[in-house]
Length: 478
Image (cartoon, rainbow, N blue to C red; front, side, top):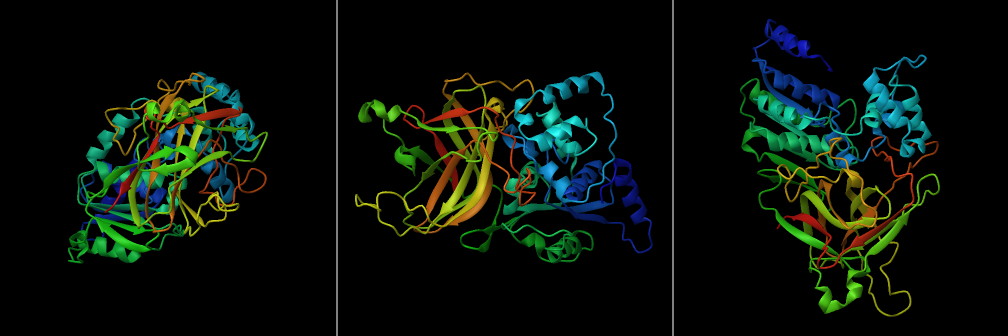
């Protein structure tokens, strides 16, 4: 249940006073009901002995904290779509007055040309917070408030009980559950388990994995030896191989971090770029694409880099980073990158007509994505890791890009678990816009939302030479 802080202490107290209670309390729930478990655990009630928060919600800034909900600062429409698709009852009246500070933020949002091109979400602004409040907050305050990270780190220290968290590969599109589960697991040093399921979304009401939940609580609440704590703490579904695997920690301790460099003719290779002196000036020329806004086109322009067909299986499990050296001709853009499994490819490339290019009809599966708004590129160096850039995301850190200047971007790509089979290709796509898949600004699945993109036509130049070696950092499991 979604409960307040007072109820988070009163309810466990009430339970322990019942004749059927052994004095030990656990909680179970998914999504928002998972977020309540973290809040309750931080209260430290002595009767609360363990929690099972699946689809974990944000670890920074509350259940819908900006960092885990909008990684890289790129705003998406999931709160709007969720409210439209579901039965949400909201009172509406003539929009009222706002406090002076909120009024200024509202007026700034109303002037934003990026918001104006999405009339459906712009209309939320006109209601001054009366409806779809999470979406309203994201547009009027599109940043992480000062002190959120520090307060979250203090809250994480207060959680002193065992927990079993997780999410599924489906959750990379709406991010907060996928990121939240990993952030909680990595930052709390208590008995813990992590479960990453496959790409099929779990149902509501939540009933999958109830056998696992019973094993967990029979152990922690009833003292039964179910064997659950004898098993490895991490369990994940490996796509491609289509089987369960286990690990001792996350990221997996045996991970070998490997760079795949963006190269000529939109290829992806483990060979670092050679110096320009060996190749000539043309090696320093960038790859280019230009994206018009959604008011002018529904065509998504992109660059697409692929390896050759793999000679053997390659297993990728864990978080991913793209280091991108790029210039744009405007002061901002969105970077939207996708990792795909393409193949099998049994074609042969020769000089013959029809064999010169990679076939355009190969099967492909999108595995995961990453996002970064160019003006939100500033890093918190102390909290960043090579495999997980930690962007500041505060209002003060937002800085427009100087048009034409080559900038280094660190883009976090949501973790995945996939085995690229021999004969398949690893594929990286770079774009800056996505669009609704339905009509009337709707989309076919609410948890695969589209994003608020630039209202300007932007030309993007991607550099990949020895001095500016754009590359993908993949977690290879031997």
